Length: 114
Image (cartoon, rainbow, N blue to C red; front, side, top):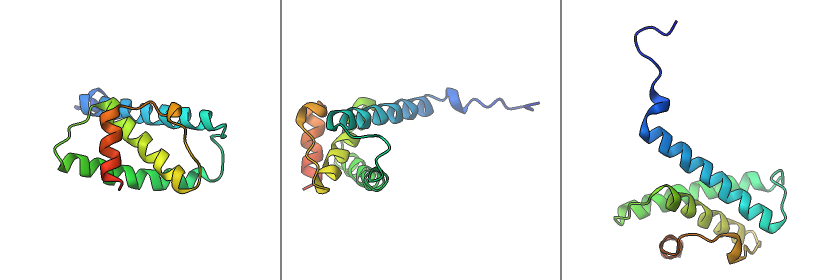
């Protein structure tokens, strides 16, 4: 029995939007890994994902402070740019064809990640 309140949080537009963003972030990461011929089970990914998440949160926060309102696709693209940046720091070059992101987001990420 559920009682008085149904669990409607799953229908909340903000929750649905974040679920979409997370799905796109996973898709973006998968596209990069496939382009690099890397297994999604590569042991190095744990650290890279953790570092990407920290960098992504900082970068998204900076974008918001600068007045940029990003849609779901742009947020996922920002995550992809951060993932490519972290991989680059690890000595893995991500070809541009592996991350065809929104150009404005790429420029913004480049400015913030200097």
